[in-house]
Length: 263
Ligand SMILES: NC(=O)c1ccc[n+]([C@@H]2O[C@H](COP(=O)([O-])OP(=O)(O)OC[C@H]3O[C@@H](n4cnc5c(N)ncnc54)[C@H](O)[C@@H]3O)[C@@H](O)[C@H]2O)c1
Image 1: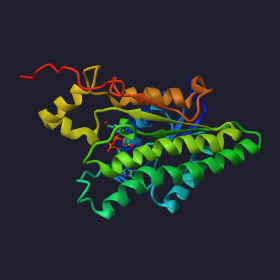
Image 2: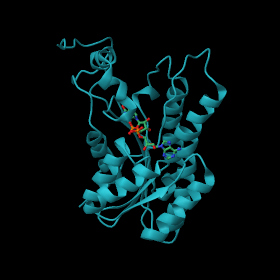
Image 3: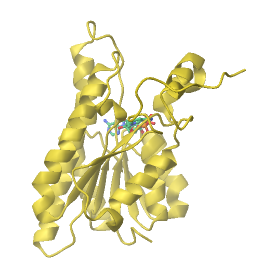
């Protein structure tokens, strides 16, 4: 198994894409810490995933430095090491550019971007100490989005945070390359999670998404987990500073594709 004996932290893994990554990593042989703010879902996820391998839920608001410090300590306490970090926690707050509240801007940036920085810095320090003591370098994966490249007019801080995430991937990759620590990103298109709930309930929203998706369907969280498994494993050993887009063909597409009419 490609992640045998590895220890991974996945933030925002109580549900959605993070949960699918935790499950995939466990199946690939890793021990996994699920870090999230939703304690009820996090504890339920730990219970559900136990049958796949060793897994712990740890409460952690990634935007809070003390929580991040506690996450590192709790992971080392439970599993004795950290080899893989996935910065997946993210939130969306919509709003028109002209009316957006400063507090909403700060909240999205603090979770999506500062949170990824705090986790990367704290866990990279552990990884660097390990390398200097003769150990193996680790891997860091940042959850970006096609909205790092595109923008959506009413998703102002979200689009900005994901653009920043791609730069975090690059700057962390360069800073950590001397230690052999690799940092890469994943840019999903539209993936069926709570974040995309409107697409289930709103036909017009679904049509909009599909008209921009050449593969003709929304993606599954497991299809992002597969990319994360590749980036976490030695199969991607010569890659760092890149963001891979798993988006059903959206980024290469100019204009739209036809969508079959629904009944
Ligand atoms: N679903 C999509 O279509 C899509 C597309 C592109 C990118 N993404 C990105 O993928 C990631 C996961 O999204 P998802 O669709 O699974 O969303 P989701 O809402 O299903 O899951 C996000 C998780 O993050 C947790 N979280 C929120 N704030 C947190 C905080 N401060 N600290 C720790 N955990 C926190 C939530 O409790 C939740 O469990 C996000 O970074 C998102 O931007 C999603």
